[in-house]
Length: 503
Ligand SMILES: Cc1cc2nc3c(=O)[nH]c(=O)nc-3n(C[C@H](O)[C@H](O)[C@H](O)COP(=O)(O)OP(=O)(O)OC[C@H]3O[C@@H](n4cnc5c(N)ncnc54)[C@H](O)[C@@H]3O)c2cc1C
Image (tube, rainbow, N blue to C red; front, side, top):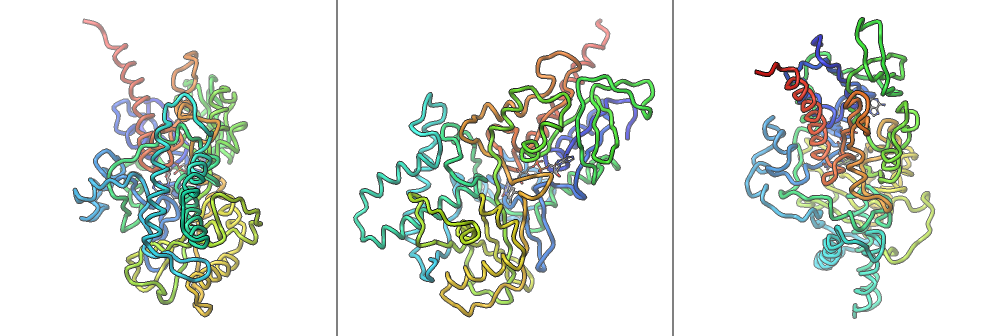
């Protein structure tokens, strides 16, 4: 570690923390830099695992909007991590409106196939309504508080105009219920009734057809990690409390006084001039009362409480032989007895799997055939409490139902994420919940002390939940890390300016 420069600690080694460290370590102020990471690896919610003879993503899956305005895309291209198709201009220019691709197959819970034309018709209706939510951006008031209520209100009007027979109407509603579940997975929430309507349109979609990393998303964070000075990353170093607005002296730094002292779970005490906090919003929700001493100002504490942080998980199933057609990409599962306009009070134990949106067919595995299911909300959190055997059994039963084949061989193995149980994450990603606004995301990003008294920029905040328009994404997280690094660099540069003799 360089000696003499400002001492900076970054808490959290996800893409926000790594991005901040990458930018700071190149600055001539030569900061004495350490990244303190609670777990044994870097990447945080970017987590690729070698499994089934290939690589699977337990966390981030796609580069959303892979085009020139996306720093994750740019870095990935620079590091040579993307293929020709992903880099092509055609891919970069594609406009998806942020909506997921249509399924290549849609099955019902009684084992019949749904016509893809009907699915496309319902998708167009649903995504059309999602697009209409943008009309409320900056509106002084909204007719209802949540995206879910708005969608249901509009759908009720549409349903009244449907002229088909009762069975077709029920099937259309069941398909729409699946689209509600997809939107919950996209937004990382239990219900769209929890997502605030007015700020929903503030989330910004970049152009480009979402793409993946053939060698794993974590190749990106590993590249950033490799560019940091040796020994700057400290693993298995969970931070317990950040003491700030103080005047700390430690034996290891004789003659120096620091405004911040970071106390780790193992009792280590690390003084610093500046700390960049990048821990997930889920962790802050659980620990903010003890994580900061003195406590956070009321506005920031409120923002942490009000913003949403839900769960989206993945369940990978490995099969001996594929039972799906060779060109399948996404198999949608439609539960015939469901409707977004009706609340069914089924127990989580009996019905958790009905929240599963379907299965993505993973490409490019040597000898295995792998499906990836997505499930959000309380059902997803319940799934985390089950054993692998229980999950495998339930999903085998689901697949036997939807294929209409009671003899369908069970998957030979299962792997899943458990983001809600992960003690240093406590969920998947953030959303603007009813009762909060985009201003709360900005408040999350404000450094401390907020009132301008005391040493400047003692604690800075980065991470996906601090980006007003790209929250919940890897590019939002990376940009937030760079933003806070630039904030510190701005301070150092202004100090150099002030100390220069005038001619
Ligand atoms: C299932 C899932 C799918 C996703 N899919 C996508 C996708 O397709 N595209 C996309 O753009 N985004 C996706 N995301 C979101 C994306 O992964 C995150 O927005 C992004 O990785 C967050 O980065 P971060 O640096 O802000 O936080 P994190 O990656 O969570 O990093 C924070 C780090 O802080 C550490 N930490 C926590 N507490 C402490 C402590 N007390 N002391 C020290 N260290 C601590 C954590 O261990 C972690 O490593 C997905 C996320 C999940 C969970």
